[in-house]
Length: 418
Image (cartoon, rainbow, N blue to C red; front, side):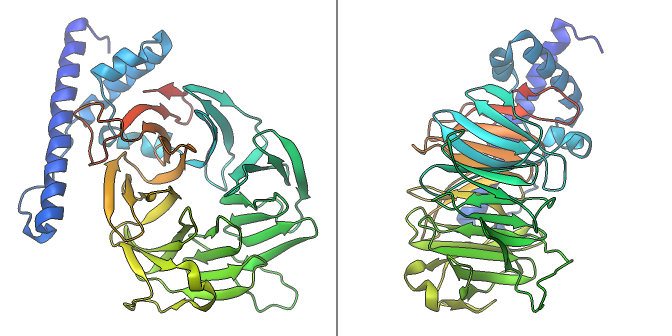
C-alpha cells in the first residue's frame, strides 16, 4: 500500500488515541484491583484495538530506520506490544544472557539454548555483531569476570576482552545447549546451567551437581526442564533447581546443605540479594507463581517444606511466574511471563511495576543502577532510564521510567530501533 500524508496522519491519530486510552484503562483497572481487591472489579478487561494498524506502523518503522528519522517516528508512534503479537511465531526470538559491561554498553545473545545463537554488543544505540561461534556469555557476581563459550571451550577474562584467567576445554558438557553461564569471582570455576544438567566446570573436572544421580558410572541420558541456578555474590553458596526437584542449597563445592520446597508447583528461578542477606526462590503453576525469601544467616540449617506456611520465609510476591531478575541495592527487579517487570523489596513490598510485553527473558542493570536493559521473547530489547519519568501517555505501570529506545531483533529482518 502506498501511503499519503493524509492517511499517515490518520493512522498516527488513531494509533495515539487508542493507545492512550488502552494504557489509561489498564492502569485504572490495575489500580482498582490492587486497592479494592480484584474480586470487586466488575468492569471489562481493556482491549488494545490497534492490531489492524500494526502492518502500516511496522512499514513506517522500517522507513524511519532507513532514513535515520527514528526520534521523530518514536514521538509520533509510541511503541506497543499487543498489536505486534501476531508476528511472534514467525519473527520473534528470545533475547537472553544480557550482561552489563561498562557505561552504556552490554553484551547479549539472540536465541534459545538449542538454537544457533548470535551474540551482539549494544553500545549506546549502536549494535555490533560478534563472532558467530559464540554459544554463551556470562559474568561473575563480583570482580567483573566474564566467561565466553565458543567451539566447546570456555574462556574467562578479567573484564570484557581483558586478560585471560583460565581456559576450559569441554568434554562431558561439549555440544550441550547452555541456558546460563556464571563464572566464579576468581574466574577459575564456572557454574554451567543446561537442560542436560547443572555443572561446576574446573580445570580438572566437569562435575554435575544437579540433579543428584544414583548411578555408579555417573552417566545420564535424560534431561531437566525449567533448569535454574545461581551463586551467592561471595560465591560461598550455590542454589540449583528445576521443574521436578526442590531448590537445593549447596556449598561452594556442590555438596547439599539445605533445601527450599516450592510454595506454588514447579521451582523455576532463584537469586540472592545484592548483600547476600536473603535468598529468593520462585515456583510456578501455569502462568502464575509464588516467590519467597529466606534469611541466609542460617542457610546450613534451612529446610522449607513445600506448600506449607512458615515463619522461616517471607512471601516476596504471590503472583508472578518469574523468568529472570536482578538484585539492586534497594530491591529486586523481576521479569515474568506476562511481560511485566516488577520491583519488590526484601519484605515483599511492591515498589513499582512496568509493562513491556511478551515473556521477559533477560535483564541486566548498570553498576550505578540507573539504566536497565530488558530482553523479551518477542525479540525486543528495551533500554530504560529508571526513575527519569514517563515518556508518553502509552505507558502501562507505576514505574516512572523513560524508555530510551527498544531494539527490534526479528528473524530475517534488519535490526531496527524504535
